[in-house]
Image (cartoon, rainbow, N blue to C red; front, side, top):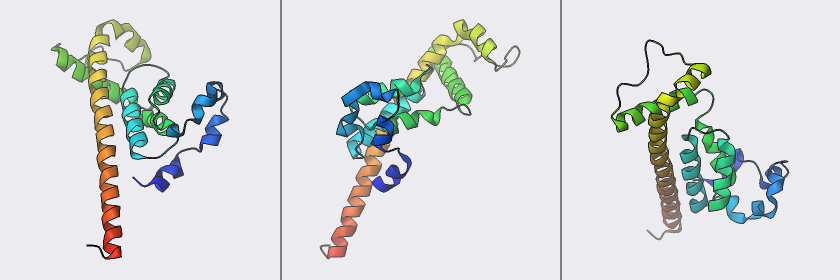
Length: 175
């Protein structure tokens, strides 16, 4: 993956270190692995961000940042990737998680049709009935998306490096 492309969209470390909440972390934010754009750091951040994105909990940004600090992977990228589930995509994403969970648990057809109201009040009323399929489906999709994100970034980065090295060798006349 081209580093220049990623650097264009990720905030600089100095800007993040000034944030009022991140300042409390002190020197832990100065670890170089949190800011490097290398294959290990970026693929780990992709795995963390995509895994956390499909877990139905509040404060996903803080969870993603904590896990990135703990695993020492690229912090800004892991936090940015959780926004795959944003206000526009969260309802269909978690409904898909619920449907997959119901399928995996062998439960009857998911809640839809008569009595279905896509509101927060209805969701809170039905939470007792839907929490297990939602949790199972979310964990399944989180695991698959995290592993897939990690693997695809590893493969894409490797392919990029091999092609770049091959082009360099051809330019030098070694092949």
